[in-house]
Length: 279
Image 1 (cartoon, one colour):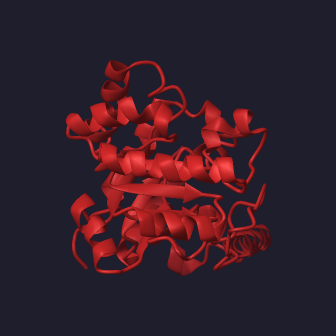
Image 2 (cartoon, rainbow, N blue to C red):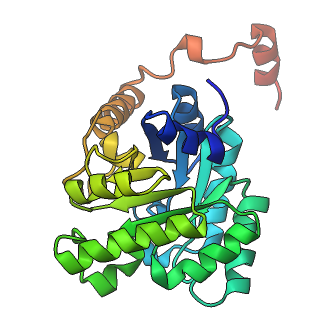
């Protein structure tokens, strides 16, 4: 299991090998996912909902992403670490965009950044690439635009929307992104885009015609129950395991079963007796 890099991820598409990506927000989870062999770990702004309890991603700050990226980078040794650029960290001007992305790379030890949008953000993408910061694009349902879209809705279903996503994908490729996340896009459209561009597409709710897939780890493990998108497959129901374990712990503490002798430390009886004599 070798080190995943931007170059090796792009090479996987050329070799017609699927790319795997999952979200990670902490050291322990990142280490587990990394040891399992996932290609990429995304420190997504989805942490706003699944880790911080926000209603959407718009409240997530650069400091939030930086904090969690540092933790993930300590746990993952082989996966390519991609950090999301939160809302308003790349929308104002090019200088601020490079400075914010630079923090995620230099202080957070991310290997790349991800930002949402097409034509409207190409100047920022171009500047980041020129600054030697690898960029992953994100098209389709871009959660930071939830207020514009009027909710979490599938994108590209009509001719106008589909054409825009295709044009944006080609433009992002031209400007130097190494991969593009396609979210909540009809699978035939995603498959078409994947064939039209030479860089990898990573689908989430975009079908298996993409070059790779990404899911929120808490979704695929059944840990986050507030909302489950249609495109999520639950590979485990960890929430039940955790609940059962906690209930057993509570029961054993209350009836004195835990801790047992094997969970405790001993002390010589004469020391206890001497302590008893102290007035």
